[in-house]
Amino acid sequence: MVKTKDILELLNIIAPFDIAEDWDNSGLQVGNLNWEVKKVMIALDVSMPLMTAAKKAHCDLVLTHHPLMIQPEKSIDFNKMPGSAIEIAARYGISILSAHTNLDKANDGLNDYFATKIGLRKTKVFFMENSSLIPLDEMIGMGRIGYLKSQEPLKQVVHQIKEKLALSHLRVTGDLDLPVSCVAVCTGSGGSLLDEFLRSKADIYITGDIKYHEARRVEEYSKGLIDVGHFGSEHMAVDLLFDKLGQAIHKAGLNIKIEKFTKEKDPFIIV
Image (cartoon, rainbow, N blue to C red; front, side, top):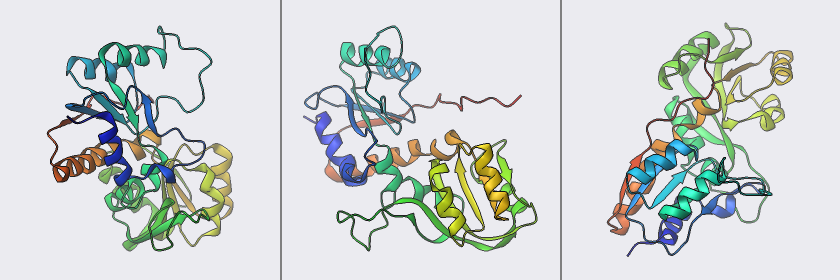
């Protein structure tokens, strides 16, 4: 019998939980490590539509990139999130696991997946904390930096990014004729690595959730910025987790079904 803790152990191989950021809350969100698991549903966010779909599909476990909770809750109200998700999880025996910054930072994790998807080559970790836990030869850390196949003007890179990520829109800072060859990326909210980008040899920075004054700083340095949005940079985590977990389940010889939750949309609508 496969249990929640067995899936957690597979995830720990894919993206070790000990490399997650200190402020993060990856791992078990709700449930019981000893509950049996026969079917898993994978999504970006824990939401009521996800939990309802998991219940209807008779899933025993929900796996998301974003945690259900990062900060402690003072009370659990079943009439609103996260309480409403917790109620369904408890009532129907659905464990909730999340792989967040550990998946972002892991070797062959989300940032590597993103960099490959947009065509970067010779990639390296963009920002690595000093830690005795991380071997120097491992590709573990926040973001990636690499090179395009050939130098392109920013406007051409923008067009390619929209096409490769299937985005209808994105935000751009900088001279559209700026020659681009070296690119830094960070999935999710990458504002915390802005100083690292400005000090780097990267011509442009691709990330999400950039603020107005951060964009102004990029202008001052005569560099470029492509903000693909938080959702745009991380929804591919669903495909990554589906592929990685599927391979791990097959390798371990486990009889578990996995499926993707396909009804997530970017919460922002451009009008």
